[in-house]
Each structure stands twice: as C-alpha cells, then as structure tokens.
Length: 576
Ligand code: ADP
Ligand code: MG
Image 1: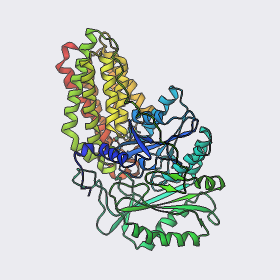
Image 2: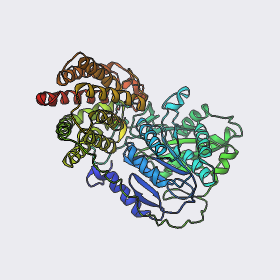
Image 3: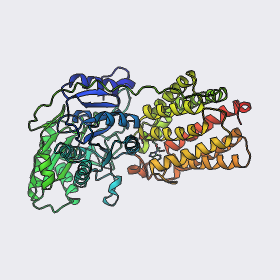
Image 4: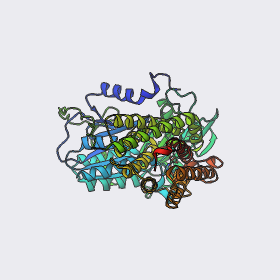
C-alpha cells in the first residue's frame, strides 16, 4: 500500500518538489523534470534520461556529475509528454548535442522521438537509445520490442561516462547501443504495487506465489510459480540470464545489479546475492563492482530483478568514472561549481494568430465538442481502466480523463482569447498530450493536431476538410506508433472510422451524417478488436489475457466518435 498523499492527482508534482528541495546540491527544477544544478563543461554531450515517475531513483535520482545532465519526470508510470522531453533536453544542451535514453515503452518511444524531431528542427543535434534489457518481455529475435528495466543504469552510466570523457554525440550513441546489447535483466515479484489513492494494487500475486517476468509499471508477470528459497531464486535468475549471455561466459567480466523493486528488504537481497555471486563465480565469471540495492523501483512492489552487464575493455574503463548524484555515488568527483542559471522559463504562451468571426464560431463548436468528449470519458473512466488492466497497466481511464480535461481547458482559454478554430484545437491537442501521459495521450495529441491543421483560423472548414484531417490523424498515429491494422490498438478503430467518413463525404453526405456513419463503423471495429491479440504497446507481452476484451484505446475512440456525432447533430444547421 501507498499510505501518504495529499490529492493523489498532485502526487508526482509534489514528489518532484520535495525531491528537489532535498537535493539542491545536485538538481534544480525545470519544466518537465530536473537539470544538474552544477556547471557542466561547454561542448559536452548532454545526457538526458527519463520516463514515468514511481521508479525512484530512476530517473531524477540519477542526475549529477558523471551521470545524467537532466531527467524528464513524467506522471506516475506515464510517459512524459513531448513538450516535457523537449524542454528538459533544450535546457540541458551544452553545445555538444543531446543524447536521450529511456526504457523501451511505446509511450516513451513516441514522445522521445517527437522531442528528438523538435530538437533537430531547432538545430540541436540529438540521438536516442531505448533500453531493452528485460529478456522476458520478448524473444531474443525481437529484442527491439523488449522493455527496459533496471538495466537502464548500465546504459545511462556508460553513455554519461563517455560524455564525461569527451566523446562526441556519435561516440556516446555508439557506446550506449553497445552497452544495451550487453545488458540483460529478469525480474520477479511477490506483490503488485498500489498507486497513491488507488484502492487496489495494479495486479496481485496470490499469497505464497511469485510472478516471473513482471513489468515495472504493474504489468502482471508472464509466468507464476511457488515462492522458491533465496538460493533457488538466485539459481533461476542466474540460469535464465546465462542462457542469453551475449559473449562467451568463461572469463567474462560482469557487473551484476541485484535490484529491489520497492518493498523488498536489503537483507533479503543480500541473502539472494550471496548465492548469485557463488553461481557467477562457478560459471567462470569475473564479478566487477557488484550492485545490490534499489536502482529502478516500481512503487511499493515487493520483488527483485537481476541484471548482468557484460563488460569489454572500453565499457570497463568507462564504468570507473566517478559519479555523484542524489541516489547514486561511485568514487569521488571533483565538485563542480554551482550553476547560476535562472530556472528555465516556463514555455511561454505564444500569441494568438489572427482569426475571423466565422472561424471563431467554429472554435465554439470545437469547445462544445470537447465538452462532450470530457463528459463521455468521465462516464466511462472506470470501465476504460478496467479493460486496460486486463493486459495493460490500468491507466487508460485516468489518462484519457487527464488529457481530455486539459484539452477542454486549453480550448476554452484559446477561444476566450479570440482564437480561430485551428488554433483552438491545436492548443487543446498540445494540452491533451502534455497532461495525459501514456501512449494514448501522445496519439490523441497527434490526431487532434492533424485535424486542427485542416480547420484554418479563417472561414469555415467543409466536410471534406474534416475528413482529410481525420485521415491525416490516422496516418499520423501509424507513423508515430508503428502499429498496423490488426495489432489490436486504436488504429483498428480510427482506420475504418476515417475510411467511412471519407467515403460518405465523397459520396456527398453532410458532415453530421457522414460522421454518424463513421462512428457506427468505429463502434463495430472497436468491438471486434476483442478477437485480436495485441502486437503493440504495453499489452503485447500479455497477449492471451486480452482475448475476448476489446482494446481500450479503440473502445474509447469509438465512444468519443459517437459523442461527437451527437454534438454535430445538435449543431446540424451550423455545419457544412
Ligand atoms: P499506455 O499504454 O501508455 O498505458 P494508455 O493505457 O492510455 O497508454 O493507452 C493504451 C492504448 O494505447 C491501447 O489500448 C492502444 O489502443 C493504444 N496504443 C498503444 N500502443 C500503440 C501504438 N503503438 N499505436 C497505436 N495505438 C497504440
Ligand atoms: Mg495503459
């Protein structure tokens, strides 16, 4: 259980405030996360790490000399938004380019990739490596689909050490890829974790049982066994990892990282490590700088993971770099001066572009539409959470709620300030992806941005403009999310929705009628995702569990399509 909070919705923000207040020697708060509070050499590659909060010391606790220059800190277990990644990375840049690294989760991939595009567009060189150490989350043949867990530390540390040693951006990226290739982890858990304010854990493990291959966001385990003895557990962890050794085992140098996931005792970890060390030595491995402690947690989950990081000469040398951060210290650094940089200004509101009366009228329809989206999401929030918990992490309801409410507030503010339809919806899109967190939040940002681009700030869009916007949104989320039809994602709802909308509009239907027909198509398509197995996103490792349940993102999209059809019917006379 998590016992202490104020308003659960403020938990992540208040946690970051307190973390910074306690660690001003190391970090200062900026939009989206934290930066070092010490001066770094000009021209050094800036290493920026990040992800959802709830994994302390990942990610903010790893910012400081010899390790990260900055950390993006999202909401609890939710990817930071593109804007947050961009803001932290921009603040961290020292003139040598930015290196981004994070655990491989769909939402993080979307947002870090989009931030990378924005940095490059501003002339800041940027490269990214997503960590894929969790051997249970996909087969070796599909290593690129594996999740990142405690092996993050190995990749972050060597990349940062390379930056510290003066490597350029290509060099840092090469080292990080190489470190990721040589890092393997496996985790087990005895209880799930409970988010602040939640009544029940995200998943539970029966008393006396152990989930094997769990995720660090409360994704349930892949397999379940009786709780073994400490020695038997050590045997399971070591043998699983040695089966996938990336180099010859005999004579290899390995950094073992035995990681506590949140509420396992250090004493228990030491008992397990005793046997881990014996087994590694028996296999002919030279143990280097063993780590036993908490490096990447999953809130209050009771469990542990073992990471083996297989060194070579270059990685071994980089591993010796001294580090001084709030949660992780190695060797002794020469203290850098405190930075006198003023806190990064919040991204300031840009001026509202000119608009005409007609477009301001359409903006009012945009606001009315978002009001009904909010009402629909509020009605279905529990149901969406429940569906997402079956194979995912249970946050789809709250994510959609945070996103849609933020979008509505931003739209109202823009419309009140005299914005036309395009600007009103574009502001809503940014707010949605900023506040929602998670994969679907980023994708809703993409969809609404694409539609906004077709609305214009002058004159009224016609039905063909709207259909073209939806089609661009569908293409956009497939570009970003890489899911295809049949992968059991929201793509399975938006593609038939868009196809029917375009077909009906091309056949001469009015927007309201075309939209209604398209909403029917989306509803049917979302329902039939129940028969599919997920091949993308968080739910993929638990594919079989979701058979018989529709995809949460497809289902919410269909609900929203129907709600919008009702608004359009009410405004029938005003619409093209
Ligand atoms: P998260 O998966 O980050 O927890 P949500 O729970 O809010 O985010 O949303 C989950 C939904 O996101 C899934 O049901 C699916 O529809 C959608 N989704 C996940 N990954 C992708 C992807 N790569 N492309 C399209 N949609 C995706
Ligand atoms: Mg989810």
